Image 1 (cartoon, rainbow, N blue to C red):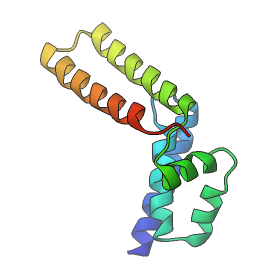
Image 2 (image 1 turned 90 degrees about the vertical axis):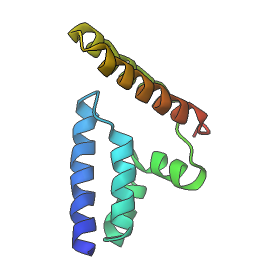
Image 3 (image 1 turned 45 degrees about the vertical axis):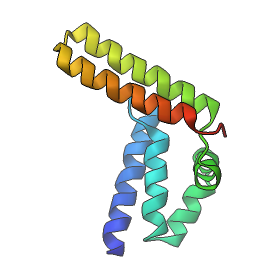
Image 4 (image 1 turned 180 degrees about the vertical axis):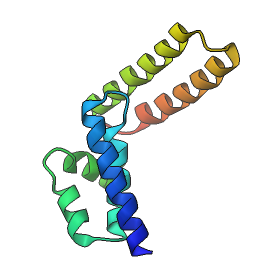
Length: 117
């Protein structure tokens, strides 16, 4: 089972690193997921991730206080608005837009209801 957790952690880190360069790929949630997986598979990789200068503070904020930084909240909101805007421009069916809007509003409420890191 440890091997599966390790593989999932490595995949999460890889996709999260891609998210650093692609704006609509969520980096921090994937790093949080990787920390979860590494905590169950590799103490060395878990320690590396939580002590990483770029990703570590966000992971620690989430693990200790369930907090998301103000910058992270704004970035997530802008990304969600951009995704919905693209859907509007593409002229998706109204039912798809409605489901997407409801989902994005629910996610935004969750994000903005967390304490700021």
